[in-house]
Amino acid sequence: MKRRSFIKETTTVFTGIGLSTVSCTQAQTKKGEEPSEVYVTMDQEKVFFHSDVIKEKIKIIHIADTHLYMDDDRGIPFLNYSNRMAKAYNQTIHFKTREKTNPKKSFQQALEFAKELNADVITLIGDIFSFPSELAIEWVLSKLKAIGIPYIYIAGNHDWHYEGMKGSLDSLRDKWIEKRLMPLYQGNNPLMAAYDIKGIRFLAIDNSTYEINDEQLIFFSEQVASGLPLVLLVHIPMYAPGKKISFGCGNPFWGAKTDRNFKLERRPKWPENGHTKTTFEFYKKVFNSSNVMGIFAGHIHRNSIEIIKGKPQIVSDDNANGAYLDIDFMPLEEKHKNIS
Image 1 (cartoon, rainbow, N blue to C red):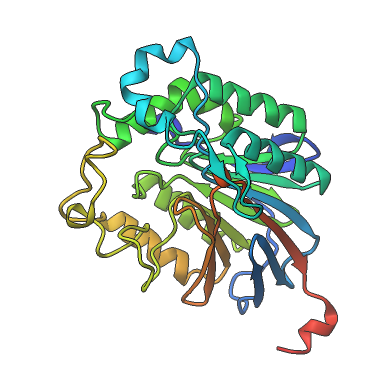
Image 2: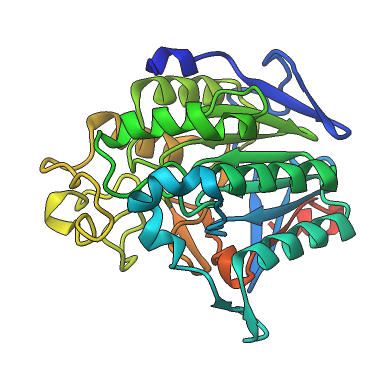
């Protein structure tokens, strides 16, 4: 699939259950204004964002790393590529109760929780699947349709990866998005899309190859220029100095020398020269843009919060173990404005 086939202007506004495309014309903040203050609290899986740019409460259930391994006869030709990950998460231990669970049960419980709380949106931030199984994708689509809550999906590195299959990371991602994952994007651009929810713009940008391409950088730059309050959704967390992982989008130490799992995962080794200039430019723009309120990610299978140049990055524990984030975006009450 040619990369240009992904490129289109994509701004989506939630209206009830459905999704309708609108142009990028509204502005909640004026260019040149001082950036609004954002107050963030995280207590285990509960997250609060308070700011005066938030006009209405937004309830988000954030799910990452479910690692569904479901398959049927259609997956038989791909067993050589799916075998390891099909066994990786068959039984897990719930992050809170310590009882035995599994990815299918955990995903259903997260959706039921979203329904119970009447969530505005469910964010599915990658590695929902351990490999691109037709059965698993169909099952997730059926559950999302039944729950009736708008959702945002971006791919993680496992969602499109059949281990040992020949091809570059970019070409394999393009191939399996087109063949299997495309229905999850609801007609939007799989690599970059913008969703307006009650005056806040959520940007879903696919960094599941660890890199950002030129079109994504242009897209993000245009969104920053809109002046709207932005929240970035990515699968792989942005690099944070001091974080004890050998990766992270924009990590200056990322590359072949720190790639310990390429043989296990049977994929191309990370590049000798590390990240591209484009990825580093994206990193700089994310943390230098005054209207970026924060970043939500997954991938590392544990909760964390890091403050990078004053911007909070919230990372979710894995849904395979029953975890998800319960996030509230709240207007800043008048009495709180007096404390700043």
